[in-house]
Image 1 (cartoon, helix red, strand yellow):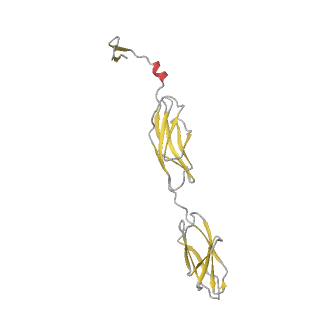
Image 2 (cartoon, one colour):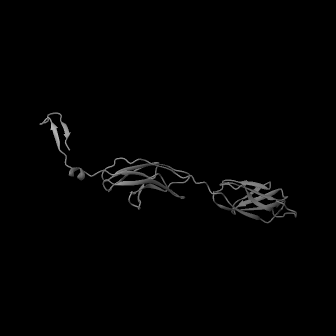
Image 3 (cartoon, helix red, strand yellow):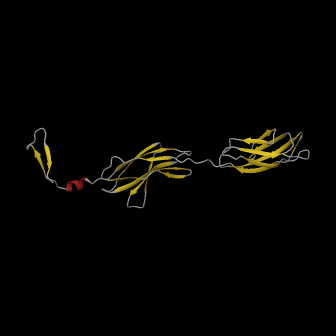
Length: 212
């Protein structure tokens, strides 16, 4: 802070080395004491023409005001504005697991989810038949592991599914996996087979011989 008169205002006030939660404030002047306030808050006293401000919020605009203290006099305030850097977003890790307990009309799907730098606000699965363009959302309870059962599926159809997690930055998705539903019981009954059982009549054990 450079002052040529008894108590001139600091000059060349600037914000340097701006980080996510800190900044270095410098100025020029000849006074021995300076006062600094941030966003109109409490006044801090400094004995040099530089000060490091910490515990700031990332991605936030701040106004810093500085004035010189010259014995019983004070200079006018001078100010500068800066914005802290935005925090780097670490996306959640989403692992879509293989489907299990697959039947002719349902399947059980699971996933592991590890939160990143932001809180997860919702998570679940999206699924569809491979021939369809429309994904169906199945919401789940927020946690590191989730399992849901898809019901009402068609027989002998291949389906795609993927896990997802949503944060303030958006929705993140895991890899797409597939499964194919089984043939229905009615289909099995419709197929006739011929079998011979030995011995006939059977006692404690029997052998089933498929003829066709």
